[in-house]
Length: 375
Ligand SMILES: [Zn+2]
Image 1: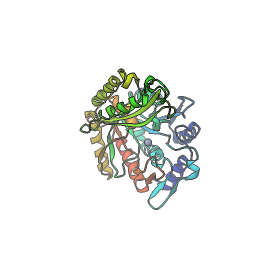
Image 2 (image 1 turned 60 degrees about the vertical axis):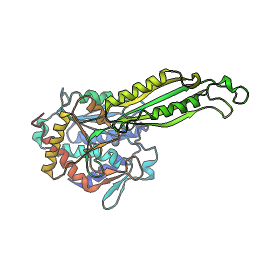
Image 3 (image 1 turned 180 degrees about the vertical axis):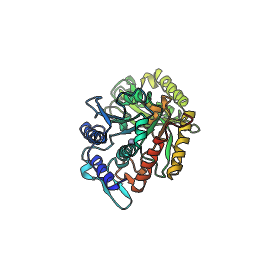
């Protein structure tokens, strides 16, 4: 593969502000990718979701396929605000490339492009392949998750091409993630004259936060973090309202059910001094844990790795991705099939140049060996 060509294309994807909330930038990324895929003979379809986000892009070699032998997934958005691309455009040193989204995950999208275009003609004829690129992964795919789920349910397996871990590991498991908002409604009163007429939402929140902390389970790896609190209007007013936002992470979906039930129970009774509580789930991604079918896919990937000289190691990680969605549908799913990178969501984000070609070869080999015998 031609690394200069790769780097040139990568620059065209990195040097565009395309945070999730910059839909026009995401649309520009989608249009560029769409052009490259069309030029290389693939069918493409842009999918509109909402004015608040950019489009999705579907690429396939069979435009009328009912079923896909493999679905590859990548996202086109980043976490960075407008101005970032101008402030620190893509640049490089001897071993690494730097820039917003360079490894999370513009290079993953490009690895898919190079791997699929490197397939033998026979494989491209034989297999039914789809690539789904979404515009909103960094905020939990609120607009595209249904689209991804529908495509995944028609696929034999899913390969998510987020970057490999810094040590080169692929991702076999991801914690589930849920975000909850707890609201406290008290009664305002003058804090000096008649505090007894007030009911402090802040005091109720403080007590509740301590109870919420108790819901964690270190043994099972379930964490519960009250990450944001707000409330009150002035120092001399008994606070009439307060809000707490809670992040829950878990390996066991059953243990999440326990936390969820406990939060709902906690908020179904009045809090301190009769303050009214309510709980709302803002987002939820189930945990991705490898079942038997995913284990078979992992074996298949290890064999492909052996063939092309890429040692395969696996990690379970605490952050969620679109892999959580497809795994929850029971579709064998593995993540981390992009090149190796690190520093995600920070100005230090980098891509290891030496990993690009081997990971493209690995991805191509995984696909050309499909379907695997124990499928
Ligand atoms: Zn990502």
